[in-house]
Length: 465
Ligand SMILES: Cc1cc2nc3c(=O)[nH]c(=O)nc-3n(C[C@H](O)[C@H](O)[C@H](O)COP(=O)(O)O)c2cc1C
Image 1: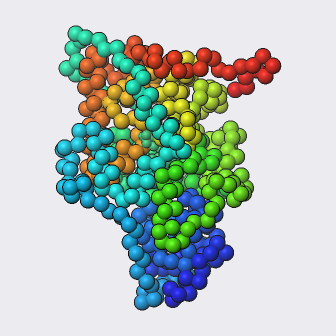
Image 2 (image 1 turned 45 degrees about the horizontal axis):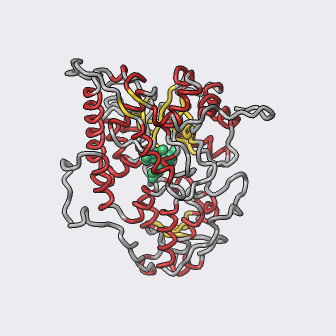
């Protein structure tokens, strides 16, 4: 096909794109695209290879686009070369000098290297958070409201760091999976992993450690949901982690601003659809996830997954009430998270939610696995979470940064640094076994003062869980 012919199909009504020398009719999938319709329409009638390839698993088109929409090769002599996006790559430091991996001493150092290395587009995506960034900043600030109560004169020459944990949350790429497997860490692969799930699974072969779990964004169509759960089951993922805090997508302004400016610079301003929910259709608002998701759906998902395949966890719990409801529903574990501050602004940090659970329904901690993430950057953060009863913690951005800065080596370095910090913290607290960490070892008074006095209740309108 001639590229001029492709260029005619440049609208919502008829949308062709060129990817790696082939033409595809993507008209029918515009509305279902996880990045929103604009992400596709931006490339309507054009060569989308450079935008598409880095973030999609290689088999995506085969899997999601019917064969009759694969329109065959484009005549290469008719394709105009697309201008490279500005700032696609940057020197590794302001002075153009590589920072050796041995120089980075903590996760913030790694983030600083990544910031220098990644494209402006990637930075905007990784770093962005909702609205005024309050949740994002609180996630880090709340850790400093808890202090330790160290004990002295204990022999800490040996420290046991092993703990039975079934879930963590580094975000998903092949290097992350390899790093997790090598370091015996649980890896939770995103629904939108840019590496096919089938390619991640072998990293967790018999001779390796760690475990693969599957994060599920519930799509609006039931059969899409069934298909995803089947993928997770077929790959023998050890747990299903259902993300429940994305009924609508938070507004990540840094990311949106970056994209919009790019369009303006290229003379193609975006459609002004952002603030309205007029596109909402079939129970979906701003985004592609199911906006009608409720406890009935969770029951359905649990049945579909099957108890014999491992636990189902829900990710995005932000109150004691919902933790209690999850327990009553017989959910095996909850994952306290505000999505790294990317969803609701002014959401509680997960450590605050954990403290709230301790205060109002400590039985949750006896009966369920409780994971958390958000702003975990130091071994001291991890130790505080464990003292308060978390089963394990997850990290999002730090591993994206580690991967961006140094590939798999960066992931291993980040794990090494964090692990060393945890050990040092434990020893300086006089603790030799990670399983001995408990409430005795922390002072939570400052953060406790900021918790509600009670779960809201009104004489005429009694509180409904
Ligand atoms: C770039 C990026 C992509 C993310 N993608 C997903 C996702 O696909 N599914 C999900 O449940 N959470 C996703 N999250 C949220 C993370 O799983 C995690 O909850 C959060 O990043 C933890 O906060 P932290 O980045 O401060 O460690 C994403 C976060 C970032 C920064």
